[in-house]
Image 1 (tube, rainbow, N blue to C red):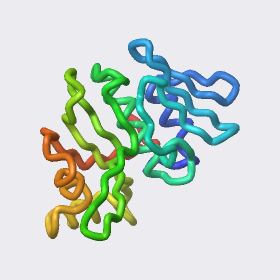
Image 2 (image 1 turned 90 degrees about the horizontal axis):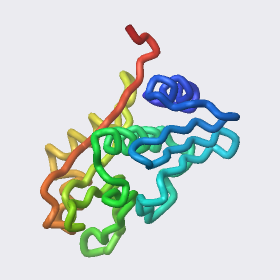
Image 3 (image 1 turned 60 degrees about the vertical axis):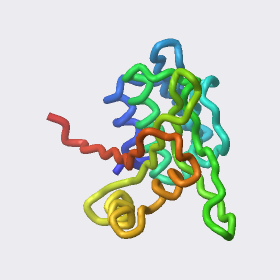
Length: 165
């Protein structure tokens, strides 16, 4: 699992440069920055952020979201096509649900919803959500009910081993 304890090593392996405890990387003119002093995760300004709950070090899942955004940018997705924490009302009680990442296509239509989860050998949120998806559709299919135009759903996880070979 990516944690505060191994995050610096993860960032270095992803090609981030350490500048006074700020880890920075620019991909296609989009800058990602991890501010260790303030424990904040800073995304390119072109990414629409609905809620800043994934922009800090408070939960290991936030590091999975960050790694996923990094990967999307490296794969050529445009930052302006990414939204973090879009919110939908779910069910009769109108309880809100927030996906981690919504990717839009070139016409600004919903294309892909990504739900990020942590994983490790002891307590895998990814496996728990995978099992919920098998039972009742889980979070992703709830979001799909609200955003029926989306083409793809993705349950995503990222792990890090300090034993790189």
